[in-house]
Picture 1 (cartoon, rainbow, N blue to C red):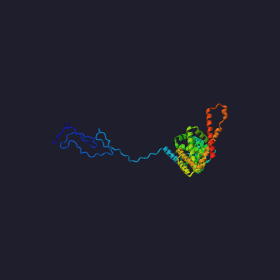
Picture 2 (picture 1 turned 45 degrees about the vertical axis):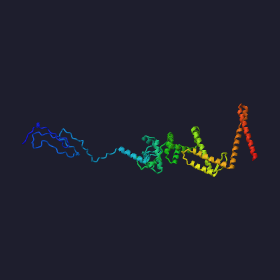
Picture 3 (picture 1 turned 90 degrees about the vertical axis):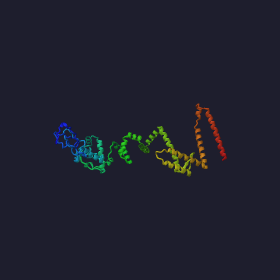
Picture 4 (picture 1 turned 135 degrees about the vertical axis):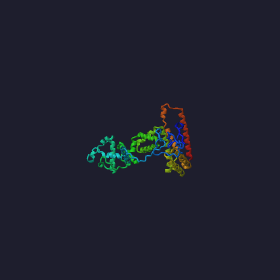
Length: 413
């Protein structure tokens, strides 16, 4: 038995998504049999697979294809390498040549293209130009061109590069290493002067490139800044000045005048001079084996005293240049001086000689001072004061006492 259903008697049923869950099946247009299912029922959903090639076609025109779950396709086809820009290639080539050869690359351009004035324009030289014309074409000075020219000329004399005559404009040759270039090229005009030649010779003697020394000589302000800022540079400058002053009396005088006019430097010089004198006193005992007594006598130094002097001198010699020697010199001097006084007191004959010498020295000084008094000025000018007479009377009394003591000593002896 069949039952006919009209569309109004049955509500349309919603269906589950198909495939990607986007399509809906429309309801049937006519009557259906009761034994058959009224709607299509989907089976249990299985594992979802991600589309890899193309998205499925939409089932209706109202639905938009869903592409958020799609993965982009990888381009497996080989790409063709784009050719490099010829300008970039040329720049890279020029950079590589300069990195390997340095200034030789530019010197070659000068050597094969420049014909200085006076050279005959024959053979391959016909197409060459003067240094001035080459400089105008290059937009630089003729002096710079000629410095490269002279560098090539010196290298050619040493057999390092070909001579100018065999070079043709545009010809490329094997060039020396970049490190050799600085041995021939001088970038400064001062190098050709007498002063520049002296600086270059001194630089070579020190084992450095002349260009470095010339650069420093032409920039005294930069040298001053380096000395003020860097202790190492200041130390190098100090050593150079000391070496220079040994052979330059005028510089010695100028430096001494500068030190004498500066109070702080004058005090420092006095302190260092005192320390040097004390070190010299100790060194004289070690080297000569003699001591000088306070009275000025020179005698042989005892073994104990000489050994102590050697110990202190070795400590002084081990000091670095940066360490202050004043304190060490004072300690050494005081120790040795005390040993000298002890040696004088322990030797009776030396003690008597020392006292006699000291007394006679004092007597000579007193006699000289008294002889320098001018009585004529006392009589001519009104400079007399009562205190003067009192001092002379006290002096007379002291002299009388001294004379009596000496006479008594003479009688006793």
